[in-house]
Amino acid sequence: MDHLEISKAVRNWFKAVTDQIDEEKLLAMLSSNGFALRFPEATLTDRDSFSRWYKGIRLAFFDQSHTIRHMEIASDGTRANLSIWVNWQARTRPEGSSQSKQCDFDAMQKWEMANEKGVWVIVSYDVVDLFDNIG
Image (tube, rainbow, N blue to C red; front, side):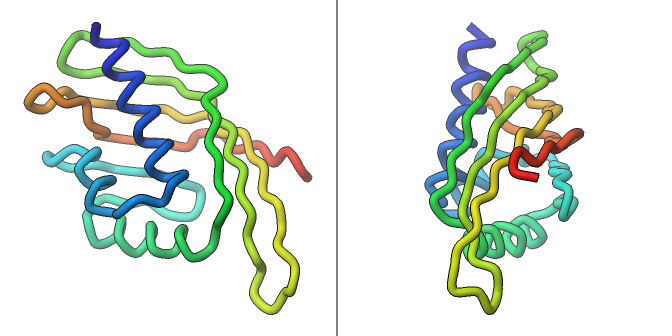
């Protein structure tokens, strides 16, 4: 049962980011006991840094999609370690350009999740490898 709930939480995260939902709903998916999100462009460890990052992402990218290619989960019922391969595609419009640009990356991610009051939340999220599929 844990694996199903954890998988659902991961899928909900990617759907929420893809749909650019309200940041408070994303923050609710992060551990209330502290979190660390490590992306190539930033490390986020509090609500303020997350808010600045997320506002920037929402402005910079549109027509996003996240496709989980593979996910491995190891859980003891209260903590879980995950390895996730995800494909991220989006469009962005470089400053000063009249044309948008396609982004297409495969990312290897390592996550740690915790079960807090019956809900699986993200404790840490590390993008450990990033591959540009366009070049």
